[in-house]
Image: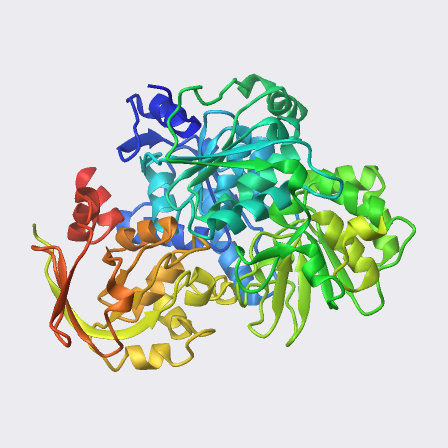
Length: 418
Length: 170
């Protein structure tokens, strides 16, 4: 019987004929955690296993991205705890101080087709865009993997998203996912492998695919997988890892628990409104709503193509006087490229605050909203209090909608004004 | 089967898709490694008296509708619930990472799709692991629950993933 992408990867890694429902043990190719989850993982390892020694220093990463550079003495002390652990284990892969967000760093340096990538962050499903089995776990799992190098996984059933047709102008992969979560709801793919396929996905850049895979968890997905292809090979080559490329796709006769067919040409720019990601309506429903802040960046939409689109829209324009635009590139590498291309200068000239790469605005730890403020953000989650204030409202959109809305100071449909 | 039955009162019933940001806000989790101290902020944004009330009932039970614990991977979410001395959660369904995290730290998570409509705050419930039923002693009604997978039972019996692995790798 044919296999889905998830079944293929888990069969190979576990050395069994992995079928949905099976619990398999697999070696982990890379495990990482950040300043929100790694300290607890180290604590669990030390307290429960009586060791601070990692199984292989080359396969364990630590990243201070959620609150970095540190905004407080408490966070600084937690980060000292992480640095000490990394040093005593001789871990070469420790990132901080503006190096960027864990998922972008791991995509650039470690993810590749067929690998098992485990992260102490729910958006580890991001790595499925490179055909890696990436999934998020909590600190105890991460601690156990850091010590032993293996983990158990329940082989998921798979949900196929067959996406065909050309995306209209100013409609992006972000809108494809918002459409999906609107259709299937926030727990529509719980425990499942979400597998994105079809001509639309084939024509997408890797940057765009990473957006959909990143958001798989917002529908409950365990992993958000795309086949590997020439574009994945080029992505790896760009980061000096072409030798890690291999071709990987689902078998034609693979069995899916569910399927959703999407005609990409019918999609529009969407908004996810407070306080749930599956509260999705067309941008036109919110047109004219005043915004106090617009945020472009995060592990969802902080890549080079996102900053390029934002810079092109904001070139020669100014951010509205009653609105603040905050920009976070997803990694130091993305930031450097965006600087060389002139995007950062354009954004700063337009009035944006461009901050050091990291999670910044998305979790309310280094950038926070005030009471009653409304924000439009390109991030993945709009939960109540997510951006540091229970009395604020978070709206999610793609990059073109965010960029034009920053100019007008209110939610604006790019199809109307560009 | 060696799991001991749980009998206690329902402290709260939470709505569908209650997320981990609501269980424990991201703004606290970077500052504090002592889970007992973090626990005072449990459910703060949606339920400000949760912590205080949790200390008035002996090992209370939490009940929730579907997709409880969706969102972040933060293990601080089940950890603060455990630190409030909650004995178990019974929900219509759980988000995947939260489910895994609960068993990893020794917090029993029971899946019973009828529970959120058939229990009220203050009801006395008994989780019967031999018969896989939840008895609501206040109403006299019983509800079958999805048997806990063998592997997850072993985790609970050991007291969580770390003690389980420690014993296995001896």
